[in-house]
Image 1 (tube, rainbow, N blue to C red):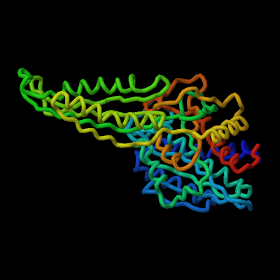
Image 2 (tube, rainbow, N blue to C red; image 1 turned 180 degrees about the horizontal axis):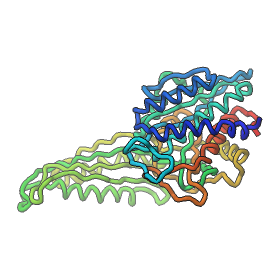
Image 3 (cartoon, rainbow, N blue to C red; image 1 turned 45 degrees about the horizontal axis):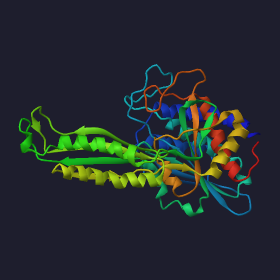
Image 4 (cartoon, rainbow, N blue to C red; image 1 turned 180 degrees about the vertical axis):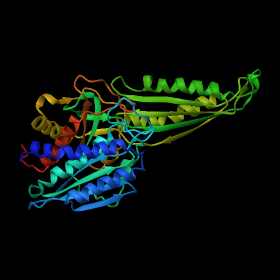
Length: 396
C-alpha cells in the first residue's frame, strides 16, 4: 500500500475526529474534552509506545522504531485550542459552543497530527529511533509551547529536528508554503504606565499632564522603528490601548499604554527592547513625570533551518507535486509559540492552504474562517513525509 493509499484509507476517520473537535471547541488550557478524545483514539486505534500528559491537557506521544542502527529522533507538533469568537452561522460545519470557535484551524492541526501517528506506525520497521508527537494546548496565548520546551519528560538533547504545520487562507487547499529564514516574528507584550500629577483641566500649569507625555511617547516609539532600524530590518511597535482619565475637565494622575512588540531578527528585537524603556523614561523625565515600563517576553522569532526547509520542499514535491509547493516571499509579523521548541532543535514550519479552490477568503481569527477538507490529506502527507524523509524511508 502506498502512502497515498494509506492516507486515503484513514482520512474518513480522521475527518470524523476533526468534525467532533470543530463542533466542540475549547479555549487554551481548557482543552479537556479534546485531549481526552485524542487519547481515546490513540489508545483504541494505535499501538504507540508512550502516552504522557504535559500539563493538564497536553499529550506527549512516542512511536519507537524497530529498525537496527543508530537511533535518531524527530518531534512533530499540532496545537489544540480555539478562540473566543462566534462562528459564522452560515458554515455547514460550525461550533456548537456559543462564542467559541476554531478560527485558527487548530482542530485541523490536531487531526493531522493524529493522522500522522496512524500513518507512521505502518513504517515502524523502517525507523531507527523514535518519533515524538506534541499535542499542544494554548498556542493562542503564545505560552503553550513552553510546556513542551521546558518539560522534564522531554530530552531535547536526543531530538535531531522538529516540524509543525499551520493553515493559511492565503493558499488553496492542496498547496503548502515554506520559507528560508524567519517566517514569523517575535511577540512581546508592552505596558507603559506614565505618571504625572493630576488636576483641573482649566489650569494645566498646576499639573504634570500624563496624557501629553503619553502622546509624545506614542510618537517617539514609531520613530524608533522608522529611524533606528535599517531599511532592510523589520520591527513593529504597536500601541493598541490607552487608558486614563474619566472626565472632560480633569487631568488624571496617570495613563496606561498597552501594546505589542514584533521583530524578525533577534538582534533587532534586542535593540527595540533596550530602547523602549530609555525612550519612555527620557520623555517622561523631560516633562517632569515618570514612566514605568513592563515588558512580558513572548516567543522569539520563528526561524526555519535551511536543511529542514529543503526537506519540506523535497517531501512536498514528491507527495503533492512540485507545482503545489510555494516558496513564500515574505515573512509575517504574526507569532507562534512553536518558536520556543525551535530554540531547542532545528526544524521547519510549514504553511498549508485552507481555502477552497474558487471559494471565499476566510481570514484567520475571524468568524468566517473555514478549512477545506482536502487540507487534511495535504497536512497528513506533508507531516508524515517530513518524518519519513528524515529517517531515509522510501515512501513513494
